[in-house]
Image 1: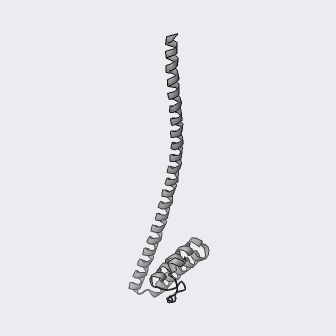
Image 2 (image 1 turned 60 degrees about the horizontal axis):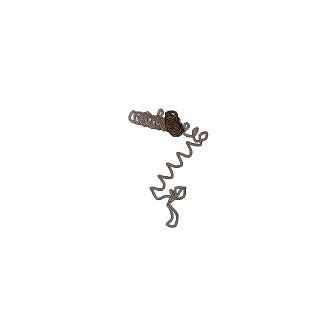
Image 3 (image 1 turned 90 degrees about the vertical axis):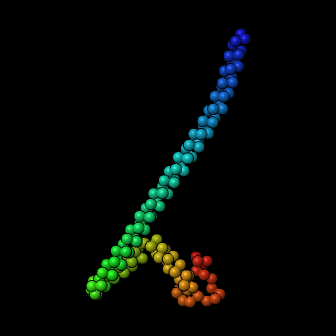
Length: 138
């Protein structure tokens, strides 16, 4: 009888420890799920950043290629081909301007920053003394 009481007492203690361990385990599982979700979000952000970086590199490489072609045509004094290249680039730019909202926004931001650096207003005229800088307006 005494041995049974001791065993039951030990069992009771072990069951309490087991319950505490189960609660800890459940808490850790919840944390694991949260961490996995955060990791997935971070991986998506990284993928998006890489995509943006690749797009930016592609645009840069395209611009460098166009400038190099223009420089070569200018050296050769091939005015007709230079005009064709120029018109083609203008048509491409206007097509993007008319169809892609993001292109317009990016272009406007870069132009506004340039105008602000030169202390001009958003419409390109010399900024009055009482006018706020462009970067504070937008």
